[in-house]
Length: 209
Ligand SMILES: Nc1nc2c(ncn2[C@@H]2O[C@H](COP(=O)(O)OP(=O)(O)OP(=O)(O)O)[C@@H](O)[C@H]2O)c(=O)[nH]1
Ligand SMILES: [Mg+2]
Image (cartoon, rainbow, N blue to C red; front, side):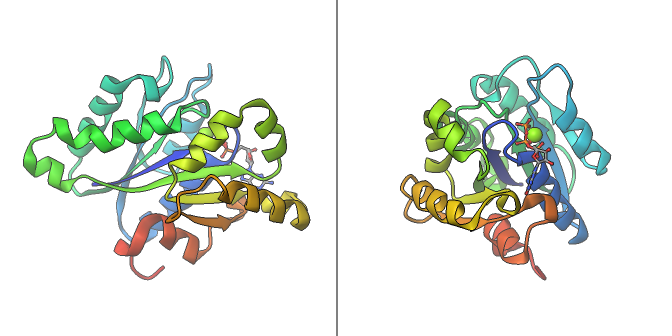
């Protein structure tokens, strides 16, 4: 079971991006399930993903990064699904990305050796909203920086709605917080993700991208 976890502030485009990844995986006959953490009163994200025909475990009642037992139980539940290739996790937009990342790294420790060998944290994906970047860096800079710091892949999203000169400056700023090995791609997730972007996130495990 390969795991992709997606962090990014409220409304940055997490669900839009993972729906695009899921469409790709499904077209490759890969079975994918979701662990979604809706904290709002309306469980919208779970409904969006379920409408795509995917299996979804939803966790309510708080932020996933603070609910280790629920997260681990949800993952263990998904691990029971036969032939499940991928699990995509969307915590709430207020999640602490570093805490989430640590929990996902430690999950195999509670598994038996055979199950632990099946578990692979494929990608920590961070979605950065290019349109609201400056605003968010004034109001919640710690959340934005943390989500970028842990990422293997950063998607600078909504570039369709931002000026190129702004995007250049934002990208330079985002890069300051990225791991040296991390990759940044400019995307407009609502218009699908290009093949090289999908390959960055899902790795070479997926063919014919
Ligand atoms: N212009 C533009 N809007 C986008 C893009 N991607 C997503 N959006 C819009 O941004 C809004 C939020 O998208 P979601 O995918 O729900 O974002 P999210 O991060 O999952 O949001 P929460 O789960 O509420 O934190 C929606 O209205 C999307 O249509 C994009 O590439 N360009
Ligand atoms: Mg969402």
